[in-house]
Amino acid sequence: MKIGNLELNERSAILAPMAGVADRAFRELCVSYGAGYVVSEMVSSKGLTMHDRKSKELLFLSEKERPAAAQIFGDNPEIMAKSAVACLEFRPEVIDINMGCPAPKIAGNGGGAALMKDPQKAEDIIRAVVDAVDIPVTVKIRAGWDKDSVNAVEMAQRAERAGASAVTVHGRTKMQMYAPPVDLGIIAQVKKSVDIPVIGNGDITDGLSAAKMLEETGCDMVMVGRGALGRPWVFSQIQAFLNHEAILPEPPVSERMTVMVRHIRLLCQYKGERVGIREARKHAAWYIKGIRGAAKYRQQVGALESIEQLEELAYTICRENL
Ligand SMILES: Cc1cc2nc3c(=O)[nH]c(=O)nc-3n(C[C@H](O)[C@H](O)[C@H](O)COP(=O)(O)O)c2cc1C
Image (cartoon, rainbow, N blue to C red; front, side, top):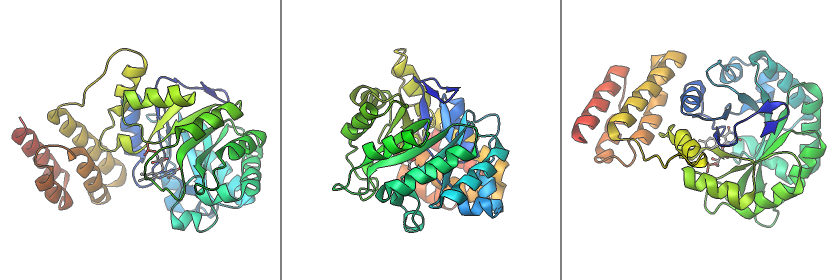
């Protein structure tokens, strides 16, 4: 499948943009497990145009996490266009526009999912961004704002008309937030209504759910968010399944702990140990989910202060789960 001239392996899955989670360390890890494409955490268009240091830090893309999109959010066509140009410094392969975020801080200011309520403004933003950069522009939308205003088809058609090279559809409304079910029907309708590639997103956790999304919606590729938390190997499971090679089981506890330590080491390398360990706590909690004794370990995870403590905990968990 192609986003503009960018060729992607449609039998791999895409790592979803996840603010506060899918940072440089996690993206790199997911690519090493076969993620075919990754999207940055959302970055404020206003912040970028005001040269905010934190916004720029979110956009650093190394060679180990490619191909990659830089995702921007905002509600002003001109500022969005300027911020897309500012992203180019980090050489993303694609610019992605966030039109799905339900968080009050974003949607309450007219950006993210609020644009689902204003399709004309959404189209103006997409056109402004497309005109401003010479790399492909994509759009990430939800099914609609609420169940009475499901308009993903209209949004996708407007995106295509404005020059977008692909559209990702998270099959839930804004009001649903992250509650089940995911509406595969609306993703199928979007696929039928546009010629640009459609990426299906929502509740994919393994090869089977990825294949179901592809089959039932006809979408071109799948995107995985929460299914990758504490499980970056989900990308190799999906690839193996879609290539009809194997149904890969969850790795044993020892391997899970090894990956956790590798992940947190990367996090500390890129953000420094103080920030890295603080952020590591939530990742570690995901890595130990479902392991025997998880409740006890979770308490220790909450008190982690150093990489040494993390390694010690990983060792204890391995020993107690032999
Ligand atoms: C912690 C978290 C952060 C997220 N941040 C973003 C974001 O920055 N941009 C975006 O477009 N979507 C964001 N999302 C939504 C995901 O990209 C994805 O659409 C959603 O989680 C549904 O996919 P899933 O069921 O595979 O998790 C976020 C989701 C989570 C759970």
